[in-house]
Image (cartoon, rainbow, N blue to C red; front, side):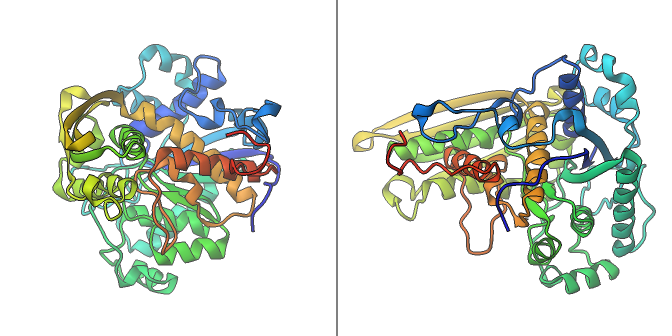
Length: 435
């Protein structure tokens, strides 16, 4: 089922597994915007317009006005974390937002205290947790998470909820037999199957409670048949995976440009330094493997070396992430790109992106929460490929090819929003619609 969404009514609860740098930057940012102390820069849902009809009609309302999204005033927040610090203390520890931004909302942030997390160091080796649920079998932990969700909805008086994973990167896992059906998955939960990580427990709990779920990390979380089937049965939208923030964002901008001009690429070397908790966790090879896979796939999908072997068939692509504590949340992504032009003559492009990882991720969390809620109200369920714009490794249907070109992703996103708002999609083919 799809079409125009039902009207928004009541509060929307945004649940975040993880109440660290990304989640607190998002929550504090929303509160700052609500209080008139900042602008939601980076958020399409809050700042971008959407053209409706021919360009000549000059009809371009703001997305937030056209699509009947939940307004920021109706958002409330809750989350889980392995550290028991409230959102104010966690934000101060993260060091992303300045004290002058946090102090006016200190009481509000102090009121957001993380629930005890479902956690197992087997899956995040560089992280220690003190605010964790007692070890039980994974099925019982999942039921506790479901009860947490119900309790928070009741406590906040929310009409609906969404969940966006803002937690750490787990070790690299691939689907096994336990992930193939909901029956095998639930049996695996009860048997403590090692292939089921904590993030999968949160995804399962959200879907069972009818709550849209987005995966902001490279974890194997909801992207396997059992939970995809469950999401369709429960009418729950899914999206993922890995927030597209810094270096990969730049790749999905630059690679389409080189391909559009038919410029060859011989090599693309990427390295990152960052010093936040994410950087420390990625210092573990098993966690880095999960990140590397998602960061490395974009170029092949965009450049299609099988179609253009002379231009991209021998591309050497290397990705590195380095933990460097002095940098904190201020990440630096450096790229050296060796390209070729007319007659094979060599050229180079160098990009040094000094960014703030959580500042780039926060508006993504906001947009995903609002758009997934919209999708749910429109009766959409299962994998929402139109949200690929926000992810490094977009979750797609079996047999579908991931789309990584940022500009194609953007067009698909806006066309889906047009349909959800009751308008016609724009194809640039209809007579009278300008290019």
